[in-house]
Image (cartoon, rainbow, N blue to C red):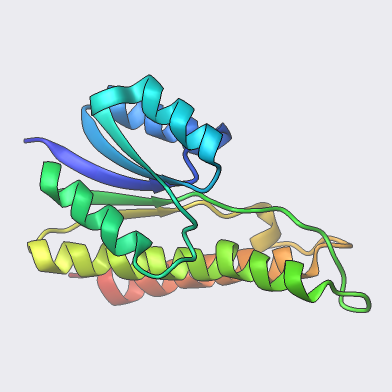
Length: 169
């Protein structure tokens, strides 16, 4: 049976490697990538094996669009929340705009990705898999990384919650 998956942050690094491996395993991959050039290059490389949506994952409707595109091709069985940004900072001189953007991408992006994945799995009446890419920063604190540490700790807590709420289903 053909399967589809959504992966965020597919333009380079870990996300690109995840997309590549999943295509090799026979999945149709819908990727979300905010960098226009990286999105185009990734789409060009994977042609009909993937669909790369060039958009900001924090924009309303992007996750629903990705899920719909995936389900057009095959049952959506998996979701990988990989996209993230690394911005240092502390609490005594925070950059408000950077902190808000980091929380939107690194924590709320994962939250809304998980919500969309679970909604899609329930709609299809299937047991799906969600992979949330976190960091050692979720379990240990590091000087100069206040918002990043908090966001990754939130991702870890959200992942535990999903296991408790939806794992037994």
